[in-house]
Image (cartoon, rainbow, N blue to C red; front, top):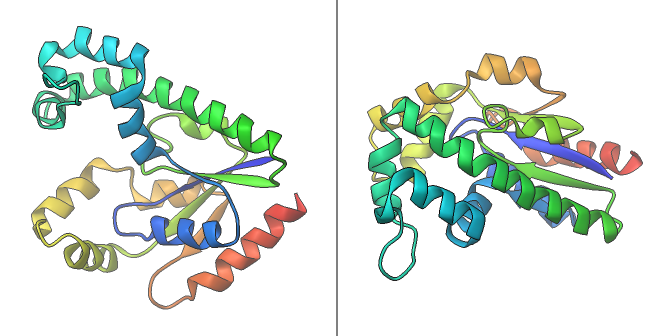
Length: 198
């Protein structure tokens, strides 16, 4: 079974591409949403987070206190690295269990969708990488339409924290161009045929 990673900067359309693969029956592991689940439910990680960031990491009802964690970690590179160092290995463990279940079910290939595929090191668990690409101006316009609460400066700040598009493209095995000039569906269908052939 092939393990394919799919990544792309904010607004590139990687989630749209993943939905197309899912329509074709491909199991997709959404690392970002699974990370939230793991942070809330993984006992080992919960204990490690409380030890690292204090009792306030979880509210009285046991829910993850995302606001507190964001304040503590996201504007402090050292604390963010500490948080990622705790979360990414546990998400990697969760992915490994999921992937083994998919393999047992006999699927030809799976997708792992992650914004921070390279940054987290999780690309090392994968056979091939797809980068979904769109020019920055297109990405910014999409995010402004999708997330009206964000300002152009917010989006630039997020882009500034992500790996550059040039770096992602240079490291990719495949590129899906989602730039409003190339049709995405035929590109996905072509990759699906290739991956099913193994």
